[in-house]
Image (cartoon, rainbow, N blue to C red; front, side, top):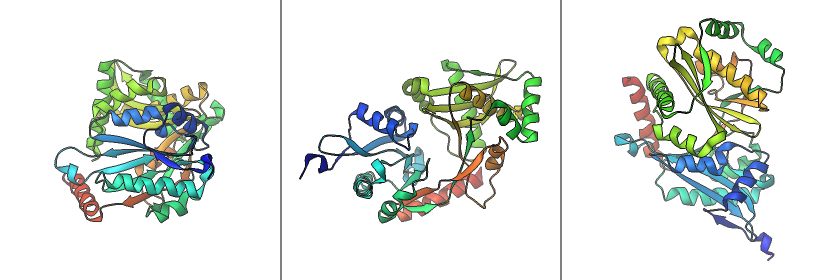
Length: 336
């Protein structure tokens, strides 16, 4: 057998080859990079793993970065899940490579007592569907929203919903300003807003170390921007930037100041700045399921973007604990 035809799994691939493979792949994205792996690995209640499929010359043929997240306290028994965003990445969507990588992942994740795995697609990976379904990953429709930043500023302005455009003008008229933030105190304020927002809508909030580690490892690939009124931070956005994409990763606003429209001004300023720096796509991220009301989707669409149904895949490893976890989340939201 030729050396190049010998396939092996490596859970500690060469980092330069890893990043080169991701950057050159048609489905390139920041969530499969070494720096994102380092963020996950260094954050409490989260572990990270990478699986690379290599040939006999250590060339990477497939790769998948995953994070295993577990809520603290009593919820830890029912919340352990693996999230794979933007992966797997497979050379030429080769079915043999897909099968080898996914079957190895299932064996590895089984040892961690993870309840379920979820693939959050950033591209159309229909070509990988047979391999995924063979490993018991079940597809479900899920929407996302993209803004085309290759358009002119005038075209972007024209695409804005009338109410959204009016709110942006009102925010400016009320002296709301937007700027990048980076100091420890400013990042504390960003985290406070995100934590308050997530608790208000009944979702588990990320740990503060996630943002500290993002600033540490992402460097120029992350932007923390915030809206201010008379020196007070009233809204924020955490952006990840990679190649042609800007990812709207986290967003939050002070409910008391919603009448100043920071949540309208911030994305608009973010789009214009990204466009100036050569970014082609503003990824608004999750937009819920088709045919199901979702106010966040309605809000995002009023910036003029377009819907994509890229879907998600889910594999349940421990059905009983999964059902208990779903029930626990419903109770959590209800009691709030």
